[in-house]
Length: 101
Image (cartoon, rainbow, N blue to C red; front, side):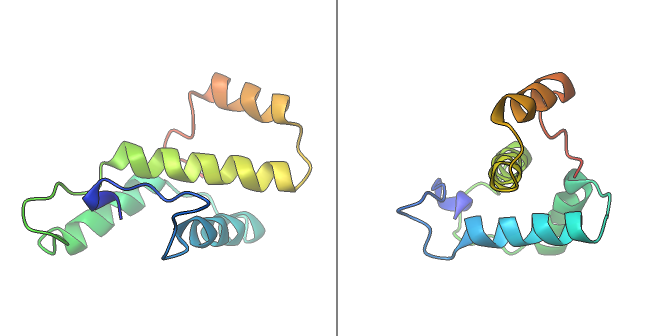
């Protein structure tokens, strides 16, 4: 989806990427895992680096995926009742997701 310069939105997410990201975040949190999304993305790029979806299209920038997961984490935390000002403060101090989840 990112390779064709599209971003999943509420009205345009045919592959349910937003829901899938929330599922990944939920699995990580519920199983008390600590991992680097940056490393996971790097492994995926190496594993699928030669399989570009459309010839000539750039591969998904890491920062776009990290930003996407950060946004999904904020949604998850708000749904769990965490105050939005607390979420914003933590992300501001931490400099965003920083690749860690």
